[in-house]
Amino acid sequence: MPIIVNGSPSPLPDDPRVSLLDFLREYRHLAGTKKGCNQGACGACTVLADGERILSCLALAVQYDGRQVTTIEGLADENGLHPLQQAFIEHDGFQCGYCTPGQICSAIGMAAEAKRGLPSHVSVDLTGAAVLTREEIQERMSGNLCRCGAHNGIVDAIHETFAVDARATETAA
Ligand code: FES
Ligand code: FES
Image 1 (cartoon, rainbow, N blue to C red):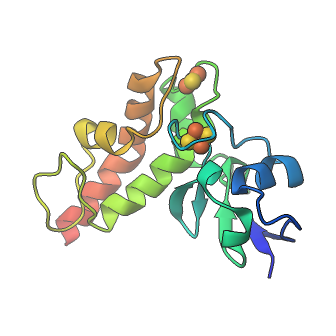
Image 2 (spheres, rainbow, N blue to C red):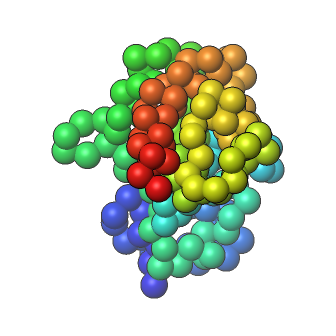
């Protein structure tokens, strides 16, 4: 089976040693996903696999046979940018932009984790969906580094996009 990247099927590489990151960048020419450390320490390579955030530098492409992989190039739709992409622009959530695709993919996966009730190190209430306070966002996004120091704008953008949604889920639970 192929990997489904941003909705389109892609044949697996012949070489089973190819990382998912290299597959996306070198085979699919989707250069939005960035290679920072290439060893799981910076988060620049974060993509979504069936909606869950993963570090593509630590994954082999063949592991994702038949899975849905979404990169930064797959987030916008016919209505325009994903709301989080728009919020990054409005809140100055980037300078050089190198960490940005990973930050955005990671935040989307993170918000889904919070909605499912997965706690973080700073969570107080362990029942139901987590409320995405700034502290929660900082903790949950701590695997995504920004060398430009745009973290305040990044947290603002994520907070604006997902905090209300998480609170609504909490109230409904
Ligand atoms: S490039 Fe994958 S975590 Fe840094
Ligand atoms: S915007 Fe430059 S590393 Fe984050």
